[in-house]
Length: 133
Image 1 (spheres, helix red, strand yellow):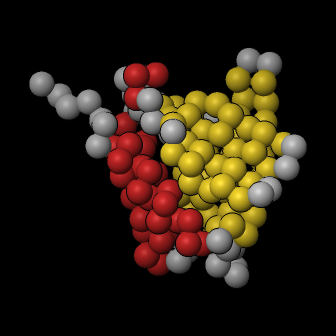
Image 2: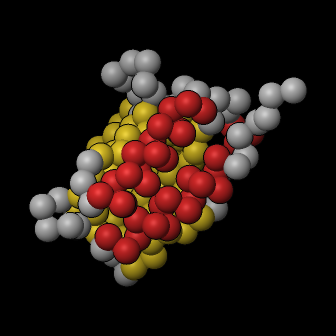
């Protein structure tokens, strides 16, 4: 479990147990005040995670754009989206819809210095991608 943000009113942690899906799923836990979201984000394939990672790196370098981690083959499913606001604050939007559980949560104006920590998580996560034989 990677605890990326641990502040008095905000906790963001990711889990990289790749055994959960051969297609690349990662666990996410976000707690802000009394509101909590946790679930598995499954992009549907490793290509989707590579794409989201590259978008995140590009966003960090250019200070603009958006990075999406979601199932790219449909508009549904769980998603995690990173954006930068006009003041340079990092925004995170998460939508979880599983069975009877639904959570929509937005973290606004997070310190942009956390962006490299998210990038590092996905870099290490991608190193766990199963290698073809």
